[in-house]
Image (cartoon, rainbow, N blue to C red; front, side, top):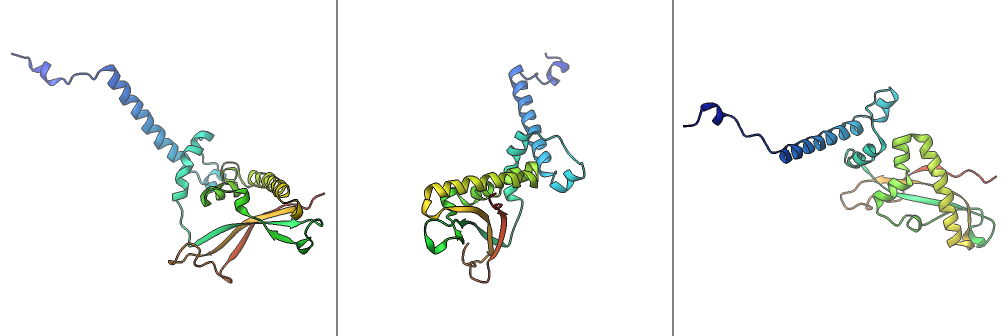
Amino acid sequence: MRSRSSTSQAPRPARGARLKRLLRDLAALFLIYGNVAVALQPHALRRLGLRVPRPGFVHDAFLITGMFGSYTVVNGDFFLFGLRDRSGAATDRGRWIPLSVREHFPQRHGVVFTELYAAHHWDAHGRGAQRRAWTLLARRMREHHNRLHPERAVTRLRFGTELWPQSPEGYRAGKRPGAIQMQTWFVESEPR
């Protein structure tokens, strides 16, 4: 006959099972911490000095959910214009001409936004870092364009987004003259 105390005790889990449970608990804590550290620290709270320690790798890993955290009633495309120099084709010298965004950013729309808007620079380091990133990006795009199109070289770039109302008929169905609003994000300074 067994004693009562020996049947009422649950067997202790093996050392390997305890280690697995500990690792799962640590992973769950990391997921909770990462989401809290990123989701609950918008710019307004950080300006007030309310912060949770947030290393760069945590910020980047949990920022992905940000794309699902907003809603807009407009659709958009990106624009890129270059100011033609005084050489090459005479028809557009000295004018702002449209440049192909796809020539510089062949990726999908969301990736192009992240790169062209310099979203990481803005979110992690503020407007000043975003502006510095835009300065470098504009120079690189201008140089790239001028290598590809020496007959239509440009001296300055400007870029941004054009927005129009959403339509149940499709993404670009509402993109009509008079409905498009242009938002310029950056204009390159005049060369010295």
